[in-house]
Amino acid sequence: MAQGTQRLTMAQAVVRYLCNQFTEIDGERVPLFAGVFGIFGHGNVTCLSEALEAVQDQLPTWRGQNEQSMALAAIGYAKAMRRRQLMVATSSIGPGALNMVTAAGLAHANRLPVLLLAGDTFTNRLPDPVLQQVEHFGNPTITVNDSFKAVSRYWDRITHPAQLMASFPQAIAAMLDPADCGPAFIALPQDTQELAFDYPDAFFEPKVWRIPRPRPDRTAVEEAAAVLKTAKAPVIIAGGGVRYSGAEAAVAAFAAKRGIPVVETIAGKGSLTHDHPVHAGPIGIIGSTSANELAEKADVVVAIGTRLQDFTTGSWTAFAKDARFISINAARWDATKHRAVAVVGDALEGVNELDGALGDWSLPASHMEHAKALFADWNRLLDEHQAPTNAPVPTYAQVVAKVNEAAGENDHMLTAAGGLPGEVAKGWRVKNPNTFDLEFGFSCMGYEVAGGWGNAMAGKGEREVFVMVGDGSYLMMNSDIYSTVLTGHKMIVVICDNGGFAVINRLQQFKGTPGFNNLLKDCRVKGGGEPLHVDFAGHARAMGAEARHCESLADLEAALEWAKTTDRTTVLSIVTDAYSWVPGDADWDVGVPEVSDRKTVNEARAHQEDIRKKQRVGV
Figure 1 (spheres, one colour):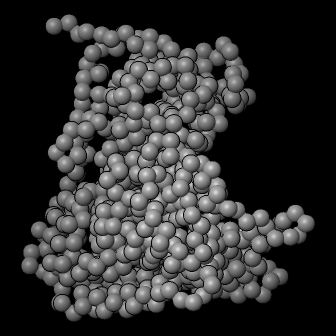
Figure 2: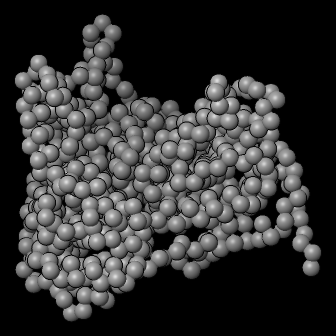
Figure 3: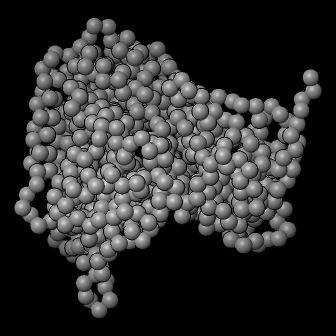
């Protein structure tokens, strides 16, 4: 039978192809692409929008307020769906495209899938230079979209309609590959978008994509088992890969059977409930005393699904220099770090095969009992810091505890940059696995509200989404509060107003420089007076949200209960202490001036050199 064809513009073919891609979630076939976040402008409004408008009931398009934030919302959706269902973000040429670069960086750093489609300049160059075109005198092939090459797992520019057939399957395969997972960026020149081409029917046949589960090499598993059998005080580090693989129950069962405590990374937090018998707390720079003591004394570290970034490893000071690492990771790059025994494969498959290779080996019960005692001490410390006091201004820890108490078992918690990540990583007691989203791998200010929108969209109104955000990050990107009101995706946003960038002020002062340009009171203000205080509740109401300002923890407690009864995004603001933090941190390597006229800086430099003496030598 002769192969049929469909004559479509390149843009129409893109949309038709996306509509015919599917995946399976819990045995149900669903669209792989749940929707499109779009801001239309020069480069995507005439052709791509024409194609999207025709299928809006099948592939819904959601209007964002900022290209960066809508791409962040797409990432928030993917995280909530554990990378099993994706979103698209599309922008115009030039500034619209460049606004998405930060979001691409976040997705690249954190191994998260999002499809970015940006308009591009004319391939024929006849009207050059077009509006928003940045010209490179020595290389006319370069556009602003080349900026995405540094932050994309897959990058392409479609200069002929036929190229779609080779490019888009590769882009999807990259986004769904646990090893290569990250953002796919495809530039769509506007004169190519308009061109018609006879696409074969086969290109649009429905396809069901399944996320692969590569099994590790048997020899590597045997080597890992041999190393683990020598351990007297091992620890398991559960990273984000545990959650994305769906390996939470397997890791917990493995840990319980073998008597090994589990600590969690930033991305891995929520793999276990807070009170799970094998859970020993968050590890690293924003970690717990319990996890960090276990790491310091560990002779073997089993790292599962983690890229071992510096906030996990304390800049590689958190472990003994002679500790041995076993790394189970789908990505070879991550698995081979620090001379680890690399078990390259899916987390679930890797854990199950390592378990099978261990035979009847297990540790004496005393090791897990020791971990439980350390974790009990940590919980008592948390209780002390989270308990209400008579202080006029509450701490982050106290506010986190109130929000945690208000959240139901299936409600989601989301936050990102600033001081909140440390207080939430330490103080949020997870009630159900995979209900926690802390974006701190890229530490992206502005993710909170935007990511909350994507998370709420994924929740389909079946749970509350609690977004905690500092005043600095809120001021940087807040317009998707209006987006959620517009689209009906409710969030409860708690703004902790501590007067600026408080945690970076803490670091600045700790390393010897007086408070400068971080807290609002230390910024240059007209006339040298007090900085204007923002009415955050009033601002949120102006975007259509419900809102209240809370004067106390009791006010916040009541407001949280009220917020759960509202029919739209609800914003609660509360002034918080800029100087009070829960202890438990590991060391961190940062640059401190080698020479300075300040005694405080010289002292900080000496301390930093002491930290560096503790670092493991590795790659």
